[in-house]
Length: 286
Image (cartoon, rainbow, N blue to C red; front, side):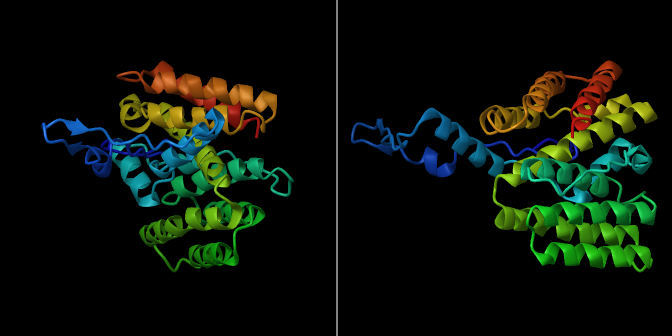
């Protein structure tokens, strides 16, 4: 795992590889030569294989890391302060028929709340968590998530918990939110929530780096080409016939550019500026 393992608001990547059971599948013959394991790959159409591979890969990608991990990485890079002031007040509509759009919008709002838990004025933090609740409810989440957010907001407004304590509680909420929404609304919404969070996180972090002029922080926070690659594959396979052409085209262009930039050995001011511009171009379409 990379040292900061995070972020792009929200993007940790766990590298997959050959498992121990796969390595042990070959057994020795009397002559000492290994016997290859039989090919048990099911015969299914190529598209089905691609989608199945994407879903399997998604299980190995922690695209929404814990708030504590995010804060630790941001503080280490020296860009944790002032993020709240950089958040755009997005008036997203959640009462729309297209749940894919609701999922992406909810992911954006989730990033806004998680990335600003330490420095947002309490009224703003409460409003951001309330928007996350509205999005999750629109996606079909059960009452537990809403009740937990209500409890958190009550603590924030009444100053009965420190920001460190709130961060710990958001860690706990984070641990149950994604699995519950997957169970309640279906596995399709999870990568879309994660994509919204990652795009918004990338946008906020690139903006914070440019504002603070701590360009070196980009190398630990924004160089995650495998995450852009994952979302690019998801868009090309799962979203190819579902998203509006304008949105899909812009998203694919953005993801390719972000993957290209993130693959560089070191990022410059121009690279960070481009990351912000590219993510801006997608976020404005939501």
